[in-house]
Image (tube, rainbow, N blue to C red; front, side, top):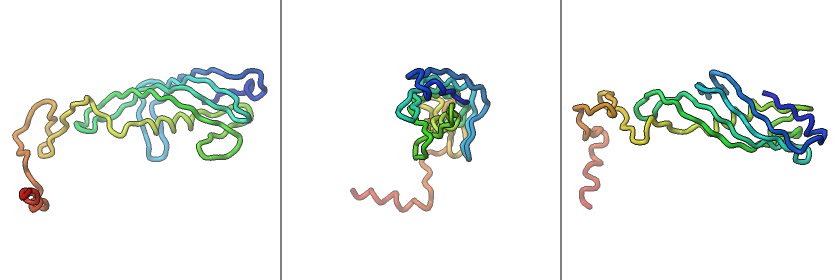
Length: 163
């Protein structure tokens, strides 16, 4: 996923627009792994800022995830806006720049990781699973007792009765 920046470096142009479609099944980094169900569409423009390159744009894709409450499979769209700096100098939050091109892969994966939702829901009012029998409460009610208190916490039940 390289972007040729020769014209920017030689100052033949002020900006370079680009559009990439990346077909992959997965994005991985260390312990992070996400299944993609549509291509990664990366659009943007690169501009010269002194000796650095500023890349602004967007990433669009859909990921396969699971509802945090009922564990159903969910297709979740991601629309990410980004602005990143590429430079020959080392630094925090700066991606490396090669002589005449920049590698967008690390930047794309970083932005997907940072934009990944903490909790994906199949629908906003998902009722989840019964903690006793495991029935999907979106499909119906179960006969489990709802007011069962953990015996270790039973003493706390009377704590607020005096108020």
